[in-house]
Length: 214
Image (cartoon, rainbow, N blue to C red; front, side, top):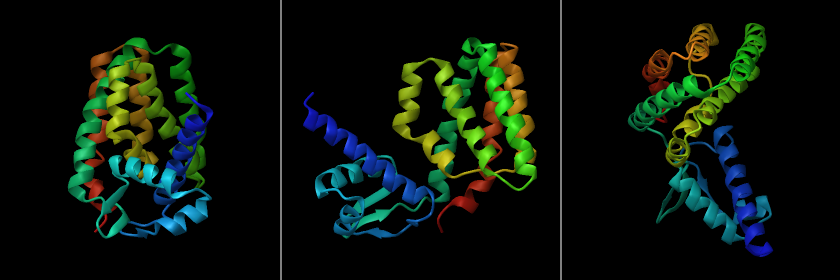
């Protein structure tokens, strides 16, 4: 691959991530129209990598491209529910496989993350717990060591969209659920680990309407 092609690919990924972050942090709100020339100027890029990034963001559900322009996607309750249904099945399988393949050191690492983050939540700082939650779910996917499962989760963006929504239930509820899942993984009880993950994700479904864009 030429240096030009490599640089172009890197630039497109950077533009993709920059715009995705603007969406997930609320700077760009659902329904906002993105003016291509203004965004290209802001990011310091030409329209070519910007258009390619737009196409990727549309594929991953963050943008909607119409004849009227490029808009930040508005997630309906039905769409988010669909994401959660697929997520529950795929992450449940990831958890089952992780119970068979994760080592004790990784289990301890995840326990420690939550143990350190929970007191900070009690002090009013949600960020460490949100970070621990993100690492927990992404680590389970990695520890499943199944490239086909990983590709399916990445291609459907179910995990990225879910984690970008932030913490939907209080750590007071989810902390023990995380510990129970890790207990099952540590005991190599793959069936229980999968069941607990399914329940963990499905308990959030009734709250999705609050996150949907009316």
